[in-house]
Length: 290
Image (cartoon, rainbow, N blue to C red; front, side, top):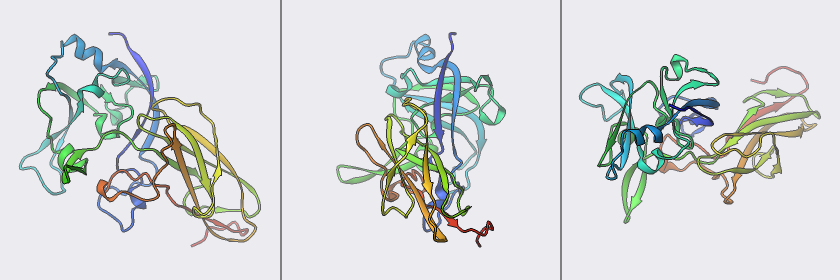
């Protein structure tokens, strides 16, 4: 079948969890559970059309080969395989791929060899790796992962309900300097990072070097490209006065939406998309501070 290539950012829904205060359970991701790559494969839509998808199918379930028993409550009575469903409308979008190449080469084992799903715009748990099967279902899929784990609290008619995570939220990260890095005083230092969103275009990026009291516009290195991150830089004249300083980055999308000031607790241990504080030291000794 004819292949297509997409550039897409994938982010774990728990990326940056270490920044939550107080500390929460789960892998203590810092800034690294996100990536941007070129994916090649066959659009899921083409496969569904060949399989003559019926009109009454409401979701597409993606099954993965990884199998086991989760440690967190509620623990299933038996080992389960990883599975995730996509709403019909998303599954039929042209950007969703069943991919077999990453950056022009066969998928590495850790990235889902031989084939995996790539669902641009949604958190990484939707891009099922080590794909073993695809099912069309007539009723909403209530698998473990999207009800007990990768889910959040919403409200319907004033009543709390659990819903699966989906579209990635607007976010930016500072890649350089690193947390607790020591910088020389009164020097130009190029702060750099990336910003992304789910189905929206990131159009503005601002940086604060005083813990959010003031903000200045940064410069994008990449053009707008749907579903791909935009790298950015900001030249900072470091203070003459030695001390500890807090850097923040804040993105804005084409609709005017800005990153929230704090984490939404309805998302639990997921969707950490508020500006993340990067603490650095300005010191002329050249030695890291304790």
